[in-house]
Length: 309
Length: 249
Ligand SMILES: Cc1cc2nc3c(=O)[nH]c(=O)nc-3n(C[C@H](O)[C@H](O)[C@H](O)COP(=O)(O)OP(=O)(O)OC[C@H]3O[C@@H](n4cnc5c(N)ncnc54)[C@H](O)[C@@H]3O)c2cc1C
Ligand SMILES: Cc1cc2nc3c(=O)[nH]c(=O)nc-3n(C[C@H](O)[C@H](O)[C@H](O)COP(=O)(O)OP(=O)(O)OC[C@H]3O[C@@H](n4cnc5c(N)ncnc54)[C@H](O)[C@@H]3O)c2cc1C
Image (cartoon, rainbow over all chains, first blue to last red; front, top):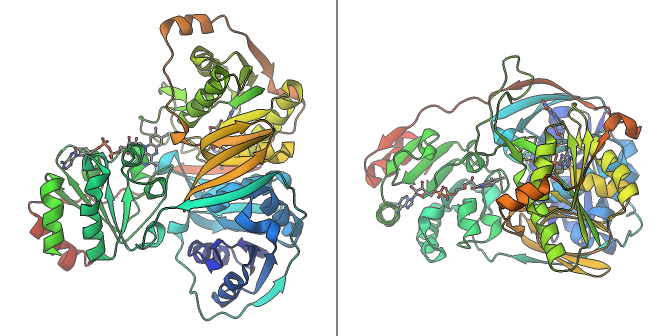
């Protein structure tokens, strides 16, 4: 058995999701290789080679992989797929983009967003916004899988010593072109890797009130998140969204401020270790999942919280 | 330009899913079903392209049970011109759905395929990408903005790091996110009119495709419930509990 993990990286920096995906690969068993594909991605390959448990890193460093367009990524994966019994990528927007394409080209049914490895062919995955867990067995020769990163601990980033080998990129399909990324400016820790997250909802009333949450976040070294209602209303950018259709996170502490706790929001945060809810409506469903609930007006409670910390 | 839109009938997002008695799936007996919310955005975008003169015809496709006709009629009431139901009482995996799409595309020859980025029941997030792979077309996933410029389209994609822009050759498959547009409601006269719009039914078996499932669901269970929490009276009490009891700050 041989497992390939497709690394997520940004401008040469390995993204943490890769380490969680390596853990899922180790849980399946066999040798674990990592594919680093991109343009100018040698430093990510160096980093991947340090991760504990990796045997070999394969690097496709080519200008046609700039922006990691799905068509070229999928063809590359297909070109080396026969070396592997399992191919894994994180279930982030990175992995969700090209993995189903590669699966279809290989005539394989992808298993999306696994939350546990039961055996080499059986996996657990959440369905219906996490309201149910399905145990799924695959009959395909090669199993293509995306991994729910919050459900697997990160493999240690240092201590490994994998070999690094080049691999040739597939021919450019020239079907699409990467134009650029408008990233939201933030000095803060990344939402998916933060130990503490402070999130605001529609109750915040306006984007102008978010600095109040940011000050609390600064004191806690936390990331700031939001409900879909807050993003839709334009209070904060799309990459703040936590939930079924946004980011799935599981920090040690999640503080929900002015968020009602809709099923779709809970889907993105209910695996957090400790949940705090601040809401003026004692009937809000968020209190059903909160470890500590405070029924209060957020415009009083948040400034008070800032000064108590 | 002809636009083909994929539509799935799902459990209403406001309803809490419950595992059935024999733990093989979700209990959908008498449950309120509706169009997958992401598909509503796909239909809306197609209709807007038609209203803007960019598209001439909007065809909606659903692969599913006889009851999916109701969901297709709903799309016709919103403004789609024609519907196709590929009937099967089995639930197909995205790979099999993609094979059906490919067969329909061979007949219909659309220049644009719009599907939801995910269905809210199985949350697979695969179908659009698989359709474009089998057609050897470009793909643009998680679209929050779509601009057709003749032979190419510029798409803004909602990704974890922010908003990404790509340019794709046409024909293309675009999977849509919720912020692409605000779907309209069907007016009563349009609901009546939709009853007379063409809806073609095909049997899946007649298409001669290999749509066998590769995955077997062994069991479906409820996730473990969280322990009940407590209500604190003051911010000071909250901070004390987080420091001394939960030890997370
Ligand atoms: C297909 C689909 C996908 C979705 N995906 C997501 C997703 O990924 N993430 C997500 O979050 N949502 C998602 N949603 C939306 C979800 O259903 C809810 O509409 C949304 O989460 C509500 O956001 P909210 O809690 O901020 O707003 P509301 O539900 O409006 O809640 C606001 C809360 O703030 C409280 N409040 C108001 N003022 C104050 C005050 N001064 N002090 C204290 N409390 C106050 C109110 O009591 C209320 O509980 C999705 C919906 C659908 C249909
Ligand atoms: C592991 C696994 C377990 C399953 N278990 C069960 C089960 O226990 N019970 C059960 O009933 N089913 C089960 N299914 C099948 C499932 O119901 C789905 O129909 C199928 O997998 C499609 O996934 P999705 O809807 O999440 O696709 P997604 O890729 O998330 O859907 C995205 C978009 O594709 C389009 N689309 C999706 N489906 C259709 C369609 N039928 N017709 C037209 N367009 C469509 C829509 O535009 C939709 O917005 C299972 C599937 C898998 C993969």
